[in-house]
Amino acid sequence: KQEVTQIPAALSVPEGENLVLNCSFTDSAIYNLQWFRQDPGKGLTSLLLIQSSQREQTSGRLNASLDKSSGRSTLYIAASQPGDSATYLCAVGSNTGKLIFGQGTTLQVKP
Amino acid sequence: DTAVSQTPKYLVTQMGNDKSIKCEQNLGHDTMYWYKQDSKKFLKIMFSYNNKELIINETVPNRFSPKSPDKAHLNLHINSLELGDSAVYFCASNPLGAGGKETQYFGPGTRLLVL
Image (cartoon, rainbow over all chains, first blue to last red; front, side, top):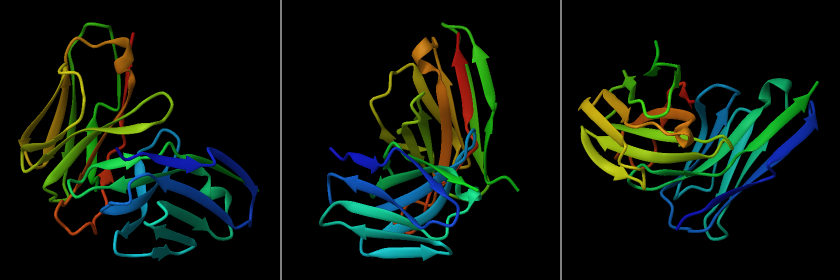
């Protein structure tokens, strides 16, 4: 049974810092791995999707890596800004479309 | 241009009532999902439909019944509501079969409170 864990549960950093969010999963037979952002009281917004054959994806200041053999993914945020404050969710996808989510990392970037 | 929309946004009701939540997507996707996010913010899949056919049915009480009249709509009907059903329910969609390249697009959520 696939389980997804995210560490840390919460993180507070000053503006401008580079930071890493961690995600681990127990079954390496994944279809893809996705990172989402959720703002308070809002839905989820997709940030990055890494297919199982890929090692990383980049979008602007965000870079996500995937290491299936070790069951890990990281989301790197460069030069953090207060607008990056949100909950970041990692999800492992199967070929049926089912997503199994971690419990999220709540990020606060202080001005 | 709302991609995935849900109605209502908020729903407050009494225990034992029956309620429905509607979801519509205008993205032309063939697969739609329902997720539940509990009070601890943990998000878990409930159902998915592909072209009106049920393909994922997690261990959800049979008081919950999804209905897909067409591939652009997936509604969730809940009978005999219980306190534990209080949560945020999210609808999502994507074009399944895109080789794992397509993410899921989420609606804004329906906040259900059972009193």
